[in-house]
Amino acid sequence: MTDLWEQDLTAAFSVLLGRPVNSFDPEAKYALYYINSAVDDQWGPGDDSDRPTLLQICLALDWSLDLARSVFEFDFTGESALSRAFGARPDSNLVAEACRTVTGEELATVLTQHNLGLADIVSGIEDGTFTVGVSFRVVTDGTLRDALLTAIRGKQGPDRLRPGPDEATMTLAPGLFEGEREHSPEVAAERDRLLAPVGDPRLRAHIWSPYLDRPWDRPGISSGGPDLPDTTRVAAWDLSYFGEIRLAVTAEGAFSGQ
View 1: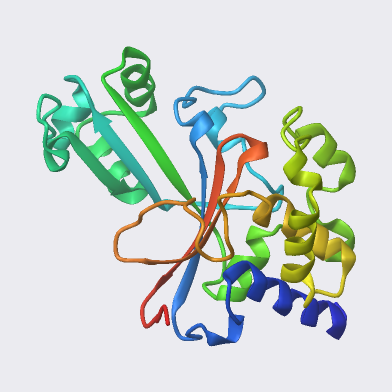
View 2 (view 1 turned 135 degrees about the vertical axis):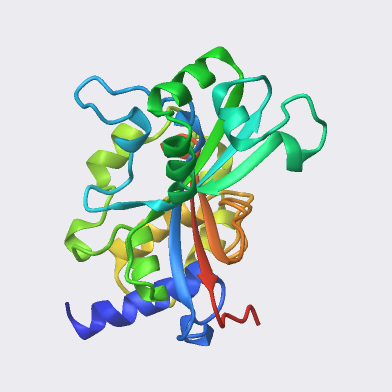
């Protein structure tokens, strides 16, 4: 990678975060989470794999998922083997009694201890006895740079940014960007102002869409992403035209949000 590309990445990361990337604590441990609420109920095997459908849907082919440190949020609405295993009370109005938030490692322990498996989760969802949302932790090296580079799917360099023009055409929801807002002078001016520090036109276009072009998003403070225990949200983005997908970068340790 050229020095110019690295400079552009640093500028792009600062735009995505809403403040200079070098103002973040280098000693903190950073993580990237991927949430696709459109497939939370698709725990059955996909058409071409024994893996659940929700594990086949990812924004980058080079991503790996850390299931042990992913976060699973169960909302129990009826009695089931899993609710009993967790000691949850579906009839309670108290979130602490009717819901459970666990890591993948904790979930695996409960399933093993109670002789339960994936089929019990699938049947519980299908029967309506509980719902589950998953914040998948994407494997990164713990640095903020790697979390952000992974999030923008930029590890293969400027020529391999995803989605490319052809892929974007296939994945965009019909009519989503055909309104006046997308073409208004005000939006164009705001886009150009935000992206002025980024020299590479490919990278400018890439981080504008889908990360920064939503009317409810602002750099570093999007409402997207999970609320995870013992972490500080650094940034989050709603990637709506992919289908209810969110990305969030969080920090653990000595992170300071100032």
